[in-house]
Length: 198
Image (tube, rainbow, N blue to C red; front, side):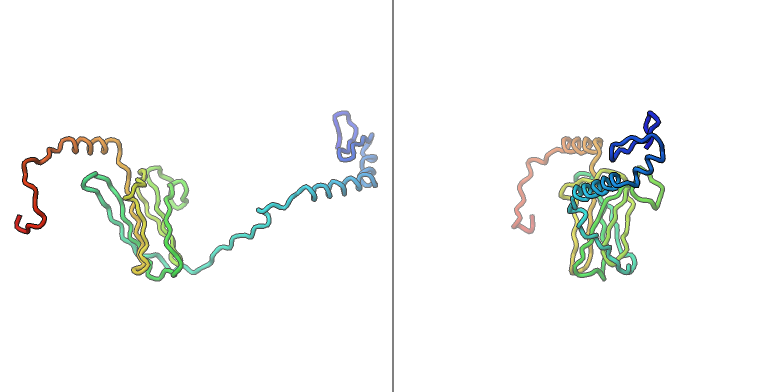
């Protein structure tokens, strides 16, 4: 390698050479070859085989997809809190016995089927041997309260997924005002649950 002084330098052997011919003769000589072998042995010794290099590669499952499952989507609104939710009911009549459906929320920027739109997000549901299906839903924050649930019924082979949307600040204020404005009913006799005529 040529240095800033115009002479040739071998950085491996730390030698200086006046011309290119001398440098080329050095690279074919014993000293340079011995240093190359020493560097290769040192690099082989220093490279520790880590667990990531010995790990087996994950095999991709190959299976024949048999089509899309049947589904039903229901819009819901809680009368007490005015909270909106979506209930997905998906039928998997020919699902494998050891497979349970899985779901995932995907932003519009993760998918590449449509142009990204920040107003939408996607719910993906997958179960072998069926195709993965996706539902386009509004981009609103999902409420992870107990009203969010998933259930797979192994007898009917149906998967249920309920996605409740969080209330906006304005909706929460309206609910609080409605609760404050409700007048409690007083002076009514208590009903007897054992009296069928009351």
